[in-house]
Length: 205
Image (cartoon, rainbow, N blue to C red; front, side, top):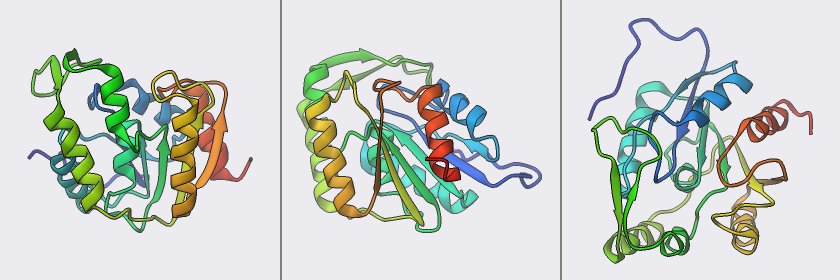
């Protein structure tokens, strides 16, 4: 597993962005967050569709860089809940908690990645073993809270849908997350969502 280390320490605290299932470390969401939350040095490890493997990758990056802030969207928002980072602020954006519902909605078979992957892969496969793996992951892992825990949901999430967004919000609220809603973005975290995260963190909401 490759972890990039800076030759000199960053002048800013590190922040970690966790991308979604069909995305990659090249996700434009990290750039949106970096523009709004420029007080941080943003990192984005490449994870896989295997949640066990992905959590191991993320925990290695957390151990190496000790980020002050960890944010994730969709599957990345789910993994935010389990990353071993009790000393970081956690932000989950449209988290796919019951991700099996979303995967079945997308459909079985091969699907293209939205951005280039570091390993050159261009597509991933949704099948029942993959779905069972996520269910087992959730059943065998306990969420870990950070110093502050925030969840931001779209009121018009075209992938998860309003009903399950509300269900996910209730789950996170029961764990101690602050819940916020935004009508200016859909499933993917855009500039408006990034600006709202900045306002939440700065106490301007």
